[in-house]
Length: 198
Image 1 (tube, rainbow, N blue to C red):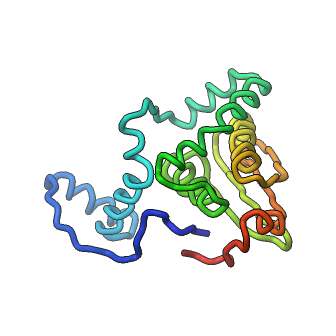
Image 2 (image 1 turned 180 degrees about the vertical axis):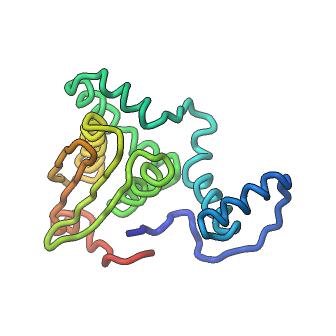
Image 3 (image 1 turned 60 degrees about the vertical axis):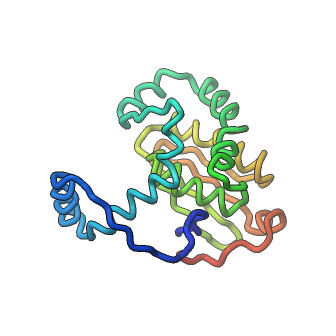
């Protein structure tokens, strides 16, 4: 499920740019390899820059491989991970949405989780679905149980403290799942979208 991009206006413009010929060769190769156009690759990268990368320019951010993150997390005990995740979760997601000019609502928070933390930052693959009276947010990853534990505390704080809705949380070795009663979401945030791609 995709959520409305708070930066997009829905109209496109044509812009001519100059790039090094070697870069163009690589873009064409990647285009063929993925079965998409060079224009689609450029659009994806521009979207990532607008939504995420430009906010890293003036911060000390590091990119870690899955094996490095997993090794670091394995050295921490569960109680430390829980404490740190809750401390960071109290303000960090809220602050990072406000820095982007986005007021945290249920919908914008799901967009932030799926696009910024998931697609752009590689924290997990987010699958958001409904079953009966419940909405589920499943975050699958390859970083081990302790990363699942971190995600549970970090995002539970966002849901409970900022959005004022309480999830049921399931922590597994390769995923964290948040489950909400739809009526609880709608009581706080009004009717949420019908499940559709935006």
